[in-house]
Length: 256
Image (cartoon, rainbow, N blue to C red; front, side, top):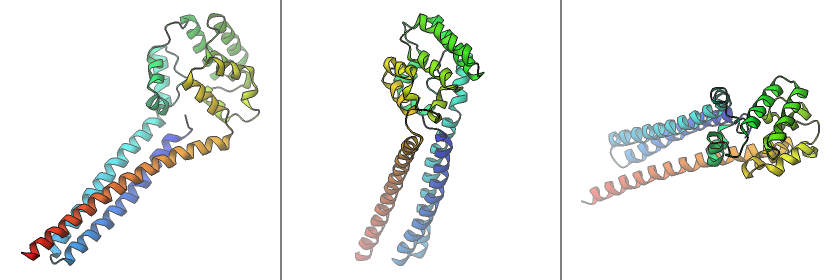
């Protein structure tokens, strides 16, 4: 849904890993010093080393998962194109893995096209988008017109005609089109009219100004960073509980 989200997730994972390592090592040193001050430097060293090692390991695992997800998002377009060629199913309305992950209904729509969809219309839609990729605007528009005769309430066909009208090669390029507001197009309004809820949100995103799209991307990234910080805070609480129990055990041992 958002451009270059995959690389940004990978970058976030790298930054989080570095911060996590620094915090884990610092926390390990702090715990080691505090335990050592209680009277046993050897135990303090071992406990501090253990806390730092466990923290670095957990941080590495979390960032590895996050980076893997970012790589998967980056490669999702290629994956979906391979699926199109292998199966013949038209799935170019879902061009990034984020939407599949967050909208199970969208993923089901890929695997199981609507029962009332005209097979011939689906074939024409695929041909139309291939013509768009070749910048053959007139031919693409003609093919989409043929598809409309078979399935006049298919939002994808109007999106294809919109792409031919604005001369963009792919649907996702509509989000960066700035020559004129795409909302002024009759084809865009028709696509909204016949789109389901998930597809409508996607089309509405295309029509947003570029700065508003950037804000949406920034909000999503901020949410991911906040989640990472919450995980780090939870880990710090665990370490503090360990330190408290160690201090309590030392106090009890000293009283006896």
